[in-house]
Image (cartoon, rainbow over all chains, first blue to last red; front, side, top):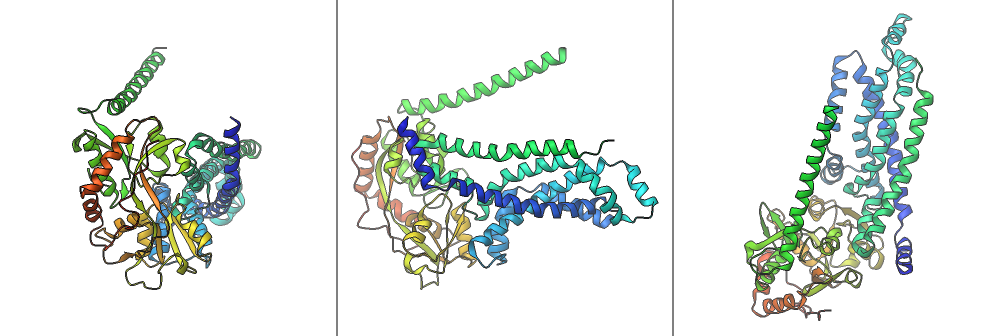
Length: 229
Length: 281
């Protein structure tokens, strides 16, 4: 048993496990920011009174929500970078990091959009009518009246999307981000097969530790922030 | 109340079905590993490496497949008694130690670390790490000419990192999930070289879509000894080694190499091949 633990300890010296988790956290952070921006714009388009904008928003959500994330990732490296020779950074490694962030963001923006739209549905119709009645046009009404209430109602679904995003950040391996956790786990298992269960549990527990606080925080926040009606 | 008991019954039925499905599987596996002759043998190979182990519809091709078929025949299993199973790199030890496969021929390098969980027969081939470059490329001759170039390898392989650490510190590494993606970026001109074992590269170069576009540099700079992975308590090691020695001696080994790397001008490292077999543990 002591032998097992010493082998397990040397694993952590040879492989940068915490560094790998840090890469996933960074991927999640930037992708979440970008997805929130794109998703909010999409939600605005979908609830806007202009049919063509609403149609574009619906089309985006339908396409990206139904495309596997891996395919978007592979398209980013093989299509956008490989064939179109489009680069997001001069530095070779950070180019792929950014491509992966974009892939994660465009995919999760569809889910963010739907989460915000569900929040919009919690706002009574009377609020929109009242905003109209005092002379606000669509954008100011959305900005001042609808969206602030909608975001409060959307905290829980947005939290679920964030949790999914944390775990989906491992798919960045498909876009050539080789320092993240799923690649590291595969490497560690391939070259230390006798410790396969310990390695697997390490990463499983790592993700549980990352995800549980997000779940607890969003549940608490959604209780606190939801507009009481 | 009635709906609940119906739901319970349905649940129990589903559970029972899935349980029988499981036991069916394990019966088949056990039958293969204990009895010889009339039964089947399960062999793990790669499904995605052209020239070595490749699944093309429902036929299997490649050097690993040819060697495995030859060895299985010597062990008393004809070609249609072989059940092929995919053995991805990270799952090979699990497949063997849980007896889901009887042997693995999947570019499986013999290492001391792996010997702690599985046993090896062979080696049946000695590969070396090499580079795949565009057909018209002449300035990449070996790992030390890679500084400032883009190099692609498959994630889960240490070969590219080794080049960066030991030979060319300024090389840009790209890791992709599979070799096919690497070759795609090589053909598109976005990376300058792909690295892994020479015979894998030769198999990629021999694919119709890549022929005439890429070439193997032919300057191997490491040795990887491909063994036959078998479960730790297996008694087949001696028999497999006897079969392999016969294959080396009667010329079918050479023929298998030639057939699977045709058109690429690839020749295996002659000092090491055909390899000297290790004694069984």
